[in-house]
Image 1 (tube, rainbow, N blue to C red):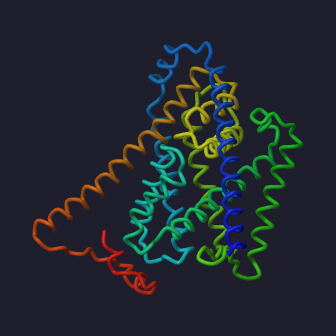
Image 2: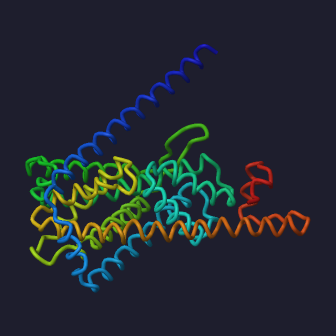
Length: 354
């Protein structure tokens, strides 16, 4: 018994230690972003920013909005892919798309995505037989998709044009090229590791059958398309002059997304702007800031409003159905298509009721 207790205490201490490190990294990134942003915004003329916003061509805004829609459409495949990976193929695409869009959009804008997005997932997917451990497995698979896509995109760009990233990370081109090649080699090694046989990680109740090498390529494709759509939206909103290489925008945007993700700042607020202003210093600051404000509206604020309305509408619909049932004097259970899954797990049929 003493040995078991010591193991548990050691595991808790290890988890707390990693959490402290993670919080320290987040605070450091946010602090640096705020310092850089304050320095870059010094002397900005608000009137010029407003004028640049008004002068933004409607065609450019519509093109950027189209790429934003494409990006969020790609985002729905994160959950759809993860559900099939963990063995819940009974959940249809429409449910996965709704949950993926609302959970990611609300979670990323509120910060602490693991908890906020996880709570929304649990709320929706519990009606399909998923529990806390299933949500944790989904978070792992979707996170793997995100990081594989980021590593592949950055690896390709850093290997091809390492000098582009030097403006952002201040590293010499040869160091950036080594980082890019190392990232691609790690991905290649991971894919080759999956080739001989199915791989399983975790133990006891927390076990995940990793996607095979073919499905891993699909994962990389999902993550890459997601980042490419966001980059294209940002590129469409940039000032017409000076003309900038799309590779520069891609490196800067992906770096900004990664830093924003690591900072856990709500909507990457401040981190995204500081990184983009630093990496795209060739633009007039007022005009670039106007582009960033328009991008934030299209990519963060507008989707957040839509997601909140959709999720709120779903909850109101459930409350209305519950009220009607109570008023009729009888409880009518909502049919759960995953009842067979619940029964196989020897769970009570009531776990399928909303």
